[in-house]
Amino acid sequence: MAFEEIERELRKRLAELQQRMASIKHDASREYPSDSAEQAQERENDEVVDAIGHETAHAIREVTAALERIGDGSYGICEHCGESIGEGRLKVLPQATRCVNCAE
Image 1 (cartoon, one colour):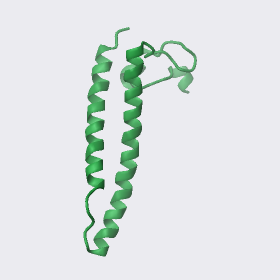
Image 2: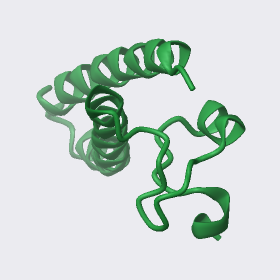
Image 3: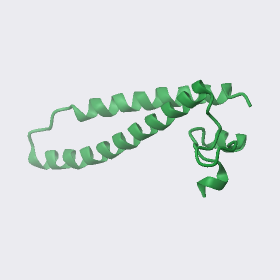
């Protein structure tokens, strides 16, 4: 099974995630307003931004790992049972590391 299309999609997704992460880092480095009520609101917003940042970092790691598996030839092989991960599953969840049976 050829994975060129999936690899292109993964690279596109990685670029989007990296751009999102750069935006999150930019937002996190801004200064707080001097008004204490506004500061409280900004700190609450920071918690949301931090959570999004953690999710984004996790997604970057998953996509990067999938690209590495494509590169080393282990992509599409279940890490649990060693069987092939179905093409349909990989199209829907390209960073999948387990086949449908092992994922359940």
